[in-house]
Length: 455
Ligand code: AMP
Ligand code: ZN
Image (cartoon, rainbow, N blue to C red):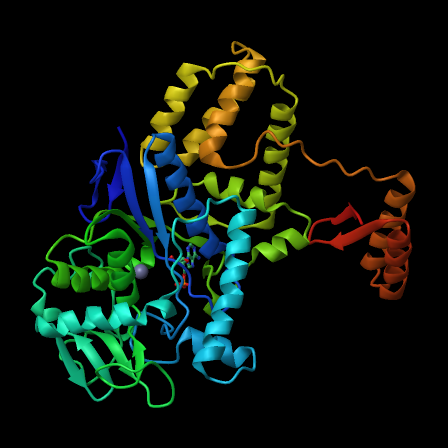
């Protein structure tokens, strides 16, 4: 039995798939105007773990992750400069559709590289929004025919008053009018754009040149790849009040069927000054983590230590703690005999109970440590059980931790360099770095300690 907290009903429910042993899942994906930060990557890791958990329960999962690569406005509002346009400006690129596509491809590639480093499985489909303009237009035309739309001087809008169930996912009271966008042309403040006119650039449509609104792509692409109703729809909690309520309104108005059976939302990764977000300038990327000599899967381990419906507070110290733990787990597992053995049934049952209880990864990790320390389980069986757990955790636990042998001579040079750095003697620090390099080692400075690697 699998249990999920369903945002739609605001309670924990037993999961029953629409088709036997098959799951269809849509994950709201990134807007690819820049490198994703580790908050964005939290979603990627969580929903990958969910997919792995379902596969562990013998479901075949069809996972769709959309890539937003055109005019997606800065917030839930229908006004203001969109993220892709800002991205173009930042890179000094002219505002053209071709450049927008190029920018999107560049950052989508980096996003998929990051996902790979975090050992996430490849989604079954990762459709780009810009490749689905025709589907978007068709969807809006259907809404138009059914009387859900109206036109203003700046676009085509969805009339929320026409959809009696509007806002059923909740969160409406949390949003202020400024977040839905002050637009005097709208009939109701919560109405939202389906198509925005743009005389400069955009695609041709029955309503003139412009861009689809930012909610419609998910309705159009989920219908195309998963059908009118699918099992699971996921996203960050900030999507509940607007983006997801709007997806529901559009899709259910067209299809006359529920969009998704279960809605799952992840909490945020937070920094001391609030949610990790580009706009706050408090972001950390996977690249920075790697540059400090920390392996990406350490981030995965650290993320799984918090339940997906709890916020998680980032600190380098916490990440270093995770680095230490993962290293210990790998040292332990890689040292166990590789003799074939069945996994321990009791441990497997408990593990399944945890992951099937609304994806309780902190309890699953605690059980893993319990197993490591359990003297009653023989070593071959222990290894087999750990490897079963790892099918869901995705931490490559049987991998030997890489040992970097650092000769005494290099260690001395590194501490001499640290002393020079503390004294702000930068020329001396640079000179020593060069000597270290010539001897085949690279030194990287982090907040707490220098990291030495083989070149
Ligand atoms: P965006 O590119 O802003 O649309 O975000 C892409 C995905 O990352 C969405 O599903 C967001 O919910 C998620 N996201 C953005 N910031 C954070 C954060 N600080 N913590 C967790 N998830 C986040
Ligand atoms: Zn979406």
